[in-house]
Length: 129
Image 1 (cartoon, rainbow, N blue to C red):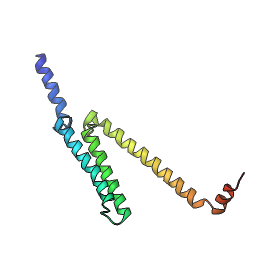
Image 2: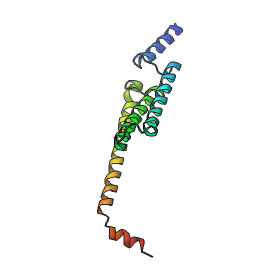
Image 3: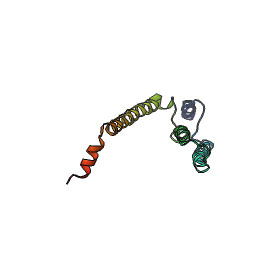
Image 4: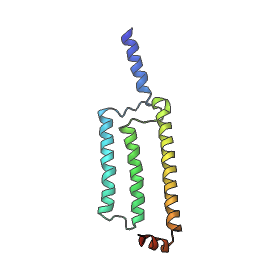
């Protein structure tokens, strides 16, 4: 009876990930191959000068970086909306919001400091004893 109960717990635990378990060797190899591909593409874009506009190249690299973060979270950190009752996903969303607020605030402050700093003040500050 104990062995039957134990096997039922394992099957219930395996069903929590939605029938897809990236914690197998195949899952790790899939994640590794995707990570290598998503790393090689930006190098190719930059070194091969594939896209002529630097802004477009930067945006494509940022998008590939975001995809690579998702691959790492799924295949190596085993995050899914169903893992740990959704708490890991909630923590991730909260972290993204806090980082976005911090980055937006920092960029806002730097932009306004750059805009409102007068060139004469910078020159005077350099000549201060």
